[in-house]
Image 1: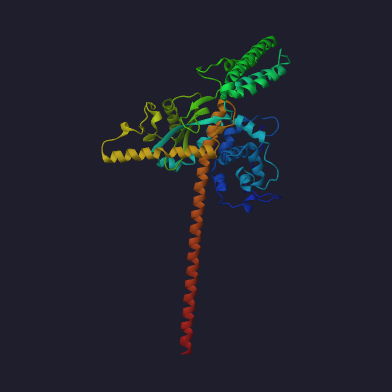
Image 2 (image 1 turned 60 degrees about the vertical axis):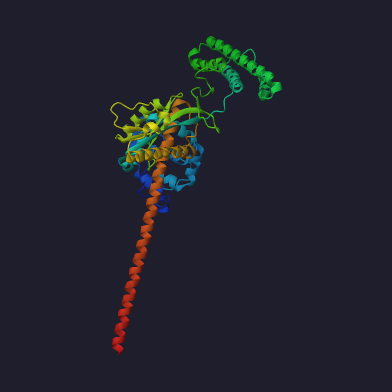
Length: 463
């Protein structure tokens, strides 16, 4: 059941310390809290709650905690702990007075993200884009690029995957209430020790045999678990898990669409071509940003490993839907060669290379300027990864990949807005200081003038 809405922060209560009297009302978080359309957000998510049951936490409080998470890259536990210590966090989430208890359990944030889902985060992302409407209206170009959002898995190896399959089979058999013929606990432990010697030439043959033995045991356990599941009549419940484990056991070196994780089978291996990190295991994310202002106006997540050229059309469609306008130029890199735009799209795709060169000195300078502006998005991707949790996705499944990308973009857009508000406050303080100096000077000048006239009159009377 939906709980009570947030209290009016301008209404005074009989007890408690009022936050508006204790904090700086020109703080960027306070100004941002007053700019967000909280009533629209509460109205948008009100239908997700029932009419009976235990009252829930206020929608503004939960949405505010999710936004603070994405802005400052905080985990569920850390944002709940920081909320108790930070009065600005409490004001941002709708509190009128100081609160000494935690806002909610950290697990409540997990349930709230599941409740609003992908559609809810897309709605919040559209609101953050609209907050930058002046920058969107002035922009004539949009920059598009892709990056990899890594999943929270370890580096996959055959022996490690086989061991996880064996352990998972034992776990599921215990939950079913059946007993497999053999657990292989001691055998697996010994084989895992032997397979570590693959890099030693004298013991490489022994290590290969250990990996082959692990694979045999894993296949044996999967087949036996499948027979027990058939006896229990739970084929539908275990169909997906058994299929994933069979794929791990049967896949070879040249197999396409390999499974790299047992708990995240949708993870893909994406080659980076860099010496520091040749491969990344995750999903591909397409980002669209505006030059100069840096606002993220489009985020799309693609399962598998599609070519960049096949992601441009859907990204531009989302950008035009959110911004409500069509841009003159779309700045992309060489990976988008051959990409087709939407039908009826008036935008011009600008690619670096000889084919993009224009005749005439002015057209050439304009083209080179577009190529230089395209590289701006690389720094923004770095900020998204290091400051807004796009570097590693801890949310589960394909939906978790989409939601993590949206949360990172929401946090980045709000962070830009906080920086703009902070600069505006600093400029206002400088202007106020300048005006105060001017007032002091005028008062001092008027005082000197009055003293001068008094001295002149006294001299006249004495003479």
